[in-house]
Amino acid sequence: MRKKKWSGRLFILILALVCCVYIGYQGFVGAKSRVSTMQADIVTVEHKISCEGIFIRDEQPIAGDASKTAEYLVSNGEKVAKGEKIAVFFDDANSLNAYHEMRAVEEEIESLKYAYTHLSGGADGTKLDSLISISMLNITEMLENGNVSATSGEYADLLQLVLRRDGDRITNEEYQAQLSALENEKKTWQSQVGSSSSSALSPGSGYFVRYYDGMGETLTAESVDSLTAADVQQQLAAAEGTQAREDIVGGLVQGFEWYFAAVVDEDQAALLRDRKSVTVRFPSLGNQSVSVSVYRVGKSEQGKAVAIFRSAVIDESYLSARQEDMDLIYDTYTGIKVPKEALRQVDGQWGVYCLVGGFSRFKPVEWVYQTDSYYLVKPAASASEGLVMYDQIIVSGKDIENDKVVK
Image 1 (cartoon, rainbow, N blue to C red):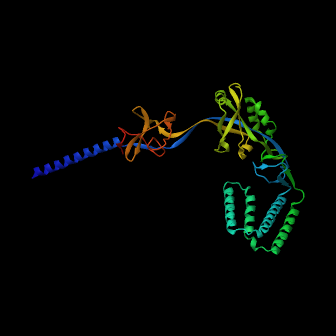
Image 2: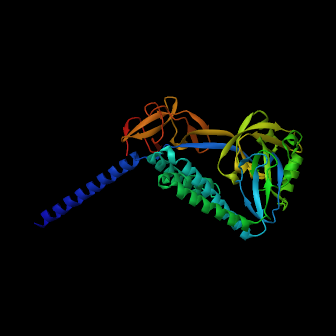
Image 3: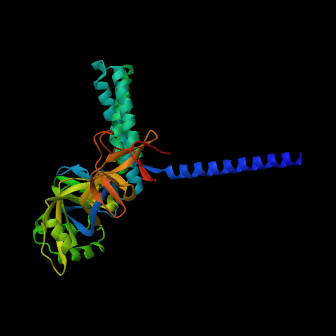
């Protein structure tokens, strides 16, 4: 009886040992066939030169009494005409507040006249409702972008649309009464503004900028042909000490082009001499890239050379900036990023294995750029022809073969 008991225990022990061996073997096989993957994504690599330089524009000062309380009538970077009123100046804040109230009443008068003029036009209410909605959306977008000053004109348009929408409720007697009341209110505010206010006018046509540093008097478009690396370094040093003047309320940028003069190393200058255009970015002005032409690359001066770029892209930030750091992007590569360890060669063809429906599939690749740790490869036209976005690239795994079941 005891013998049978021991034989039963021995059988159970052997069975447990066999199960452990089987489980361990399956785990070993599973670990051996298990792979790690990464999603195929497209990335861009830039080769760039970082340097410091200075903006050059044709500009002139706009005279005015900046010591007084000022109300600017145009936005920074806005295009203006010759003789256009740029700013109005007041002796105190009360006169400025009265001026604001007077301008608001003037807009109401114009809106009322506009509405009454269209009373007999039979305006479509549905269309007006649509225009009102669009105007409200425009105002919301301007406010979200922080462009508060630009909303004044949109508010006036919205008011006109609202008054026009309700225009059929206004009789001629009511119109005349409202108009008379507004005219009287305007006169009241106008008397509080007084006659001591003065204004600044644009001396020509161009783009208005709020800050004028005076460097535009020497740094002109005509000067770029004779600038040297030493000149640019001297101007960069001078730009750090510039201050606004009280007799100047802004500047007028004329022409439709600006230049940027930078100091680069001789090997960088040699790279630029063979190019007609490059892409640049000014980090402190945002992430926007702009294509500029290579206007001139000067001779080497003690290992340094001046490089001058030209552009016709008019932007508020470019019109207001002077001394800036610049990233000069001279080569750009775009492709699917493939880790070096994922690249394999099959029958003389370079490619990668991808996990497709539980199977490993070999996909040929052609790279456009490589580093010590990864490659950028051209995306294929379709998944059946090669590697495409969102494929699961097999980065590591043993005994990977085409059409093999993997985990």
